[in-house]
Image (tube, rainbow, N blue to C red):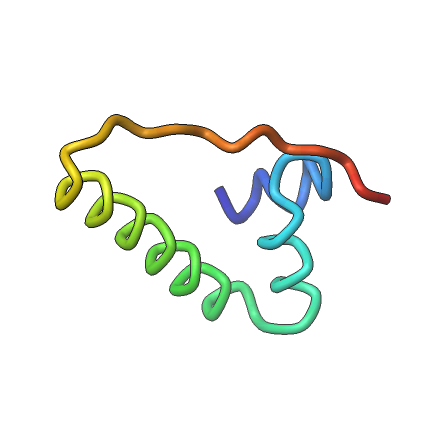
Length: 59
């Protein structure tokens, strides 16, 4: 997803691309893993399905 965020840019992964502008790709990968783990934990603890948030281009 790190490579795809560089290619697709702000439209699909704005927080990840902005993070990669400030930090290295390795730090961004750890942040992405942390985000995915938190989403998975919240889904399992609440017994809810994944609800994707619509992405809006704000540029």
